[in-house]
Image (cartoon, rainbow, N blue to C red; front, side, top):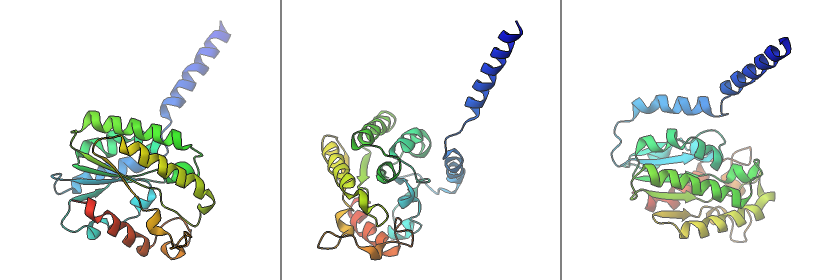
Length: 218
């Protein structure tokens, strides 16, 4: 009898610990939600979300003056992370346009395959199409090249090709190529576009993104 009670206690304890486990970006996403009171208007809102390359775009509003842009990127997220938090960082804002930057960390450290990332993107798009108007335009920004992850070039090129192919089959979904814009004419990477870590962009890098995305931010 004592053994049964002990085993039951262990089982309940395990369930309790599991219930208390949080997603790695739970607190950061909660902090983003707390900032919602600062949003002046949600009319014609253009949402940017994804990983740190968007999160660190601190001049986003200045780069697109006169546009109601909102940054809801978090951490060093992956497509699966964004899928997990879609109901928190995408759906509530009812945006007219969504810009998504994911895939970089999926390939860079999560060891996800192109097929797995596309599957997550497809599930994410299903949520968007189910819970938001069909007129919402969704732009997937290609993972960028970087000094730190140049050794994974072939995987990045393959994923960008796969992403572009997948996007072509979807309505009101588009692919934006920033990869080629950040290379030299000979196909090598422009090292002047990055900060010291060789992964994240400096102002020159964001200038390229601004100029590339400008015609879509409307």
